Image 1 (cartoon, one colour):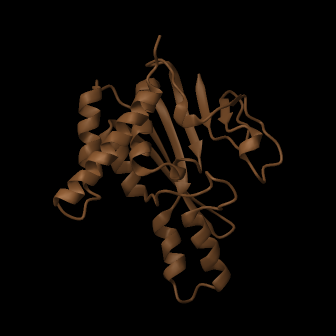
Image 2 (cartoon, helix red, strand yellow):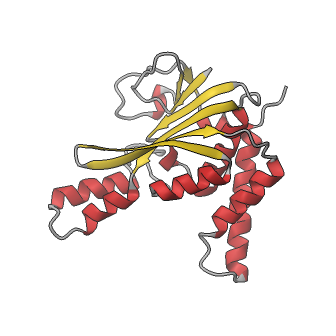
Length: 216
């Protein structure tokens, strides 16, 4: 079983295509989804999924939620299962914005690609991922990096990461420890206020994990 999460109007054969219902979209002309759902609320049994695939969806999640979803997807995946994520390339896109030779239109298109299209409540980008940043997260959660693809489309820059769940038995406790270490990298210092912020992030991470746990 292969999942295509946040499918939009792109239907992939041999996948279960999942997206919000049409009522949550303002410009989408049709729905091709096999299942209408909030993908942060999905739950599948452990080791039951062959592949989880997302194109221009992952950047819509806050950092703690994104970490929680990757942890959950890993638990869903069968041994050697595939995780395939495509996101805007923050690094290459920022170069367009900062380049004094870029046209005004190129810069505004790039800014939209960084922050989202804003036509719906969900159409906001919560994170600017770079290839190294996303690869770092996946490696911490015991994914083996298989392929990194870069592409461009009408002045926008993107990358795809294809990774495979490795054979290491990663416990829920160890996953949380590794995510905490990853998120700690976003703290400006070790002051009380910053550590409290990390605590809030970890609560959000655990909340997302709990949503995705499968109860028989």
